[in-house]
Length: 392
Image (cartoon, rainbow, N blue to C red):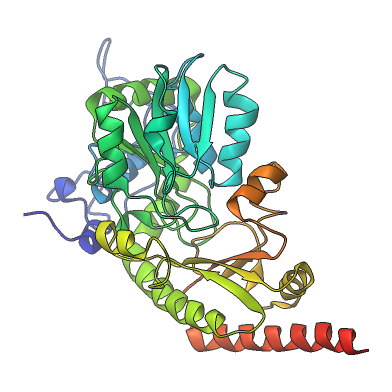
């Protein structure tokens, strides 16, 4: 009988009963570049850390277990994971990608992948007719759900049926929900991607990326590519991500609890014109999320009345930090147009509804009373400053 995910964050069942690490509870850091061979043609199973390392291998087994996959690949960053993924494709191949994606992914597709002969159709995968964009050279569909930053939700199982019908790979970036709340492979995806710097690490202290699959043919290709490109995650960073995963469940639960309360508070503010959080019943993806995920996550996006209001909020937050990234224990506020999506063409920003009054909030695990108190004080200060200026 399979153990629950909270337990699998802590215990890799297949390693139980082994004493190869002297009974160490915390998996050791094997900080070595190379390994001695027992003899000619013989190996301990490890030859060179670019190929594999015990700490990295242990982490990959844990992440594969959490995503219900058969193999996982730990890479130096989330973008390293996207870059390795794109090596599965060849000049002339075509991919269908969601139009609302992390800006770094869009930048890679437009400036590197297209240069290498790969073409893309950028569409709204939760609304548009995906089949209408499939060509004879289409190889994959690439989505985030929820998307970054507009929190669009795609029905993974429905999209998987379309992908399988046409022999396409379905790739899902699961960073926003983590394997604790959503498992795309179980819903029919072929490859799951994570920026491990976010919820898996959970402490804003290291970078990592992951690819996970349950297909042996894809696993073989990725294992060859990771040793060839050399982007595997270093042992110490593997240790930090392993440490972070141990508290994944309780962090996600607490952060989500805070996010629900903050979304409700934002909905009641006159300066907020829109709150986009899939845990709100009015969100168009709410019922899909109820069906395919175990939670709604702790990411939310909101629009304020003006660019001036957004900038003033960013200037005045104190405990909440105006910073890049997401998914850590600290609450972070991000301005997509100058940070995560700074290199995205204006027409794509406009298409997705990302404006200069859009703010993205990664809700942390602080006491929610303190978060709401700060937000209330900041909003009051901004309103007084801006509206007072108008009156004068």
